[in-house]
Length: 69
Image (tube, rainbow, N blue to C red; front, side, top):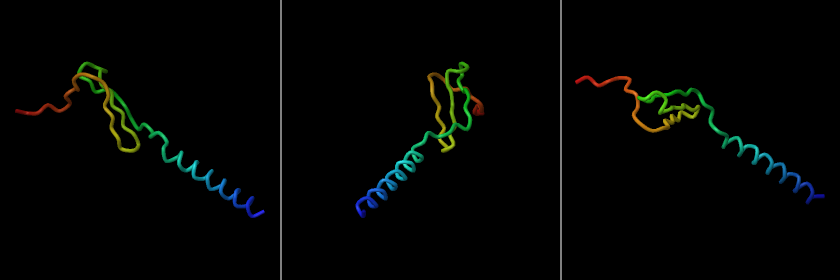
């Protein structure tokens, strides 16, 4: 009977660990996204709820604030 009780507790702990572990590795949620390429949509940006900003694509980026000379 002790072995069965130990096995049940072990399975419950393992199940809880797997559920919590899966939540820790969930994909981050997208907060906002858009385009920022000089040629239109050649570059895209995505902001995640983790604070990560990803810019993807090729080519030049649109200049939003030109430097004064």
